[in-house]
Amino acid sequence: MNARLASALLVCLCICGTLVLPVRSHAKELTLPVCYGFSCKIRQIVSITPAEWRSVVDWFDGSATTPEDERQQIRQAIGWMEVVVSRYTPTHLDKGMNLEKHPVDMTGQMDCIDESINTTTYLTLFEQQGHLHWHRVTDRAYRGSLLDAHWAAQVEQVGSAVNYVVDSWFQDNGMLPYIAKSTEWVDIRWAFFRHRKDN
Image (tube, rainbow, N blue to C red):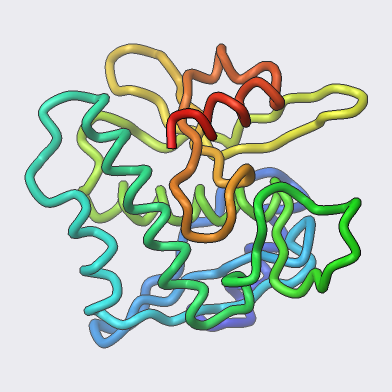
């Protein structure tokens, strides 16, 4: 699959809300689409080396014995995947939340749409390659309100029908994402302060 097709699939994801599977190329590298710039305005195809990919999935070494353990592995792997990807994109400049009120250079900044699409892409790769045993990737979660509409990646605990959000939006690039039951994912401000307390 070439870069043009991968970009087209990302556009479809943003418009239709359907899941685009990451692009996998030759054994020499792993290629995937990455969003940034708010609402997936900028779509970049990134290739990471086998060594970089191993450094990410090494967080899953030693199969998790409980779903809770695997969710901690997911947090670590997503955080490190953001670091790896930011070597090839300006997303290393991404700050937690949207910073609309701060007059700073917005290069590499991501909103919740960018974050949720990227995290879903990374989770799908983990699932495709057999690193998730207690969870499966589902559609992104959406929390709608007049002032605080919000998107997040989401996984379902196998055999439980319980969904968990995996939300990277609250923290700077490479920091551990917030994970909680989707049913608790109601008040974004509450989620943010709880996440800060837990880190």
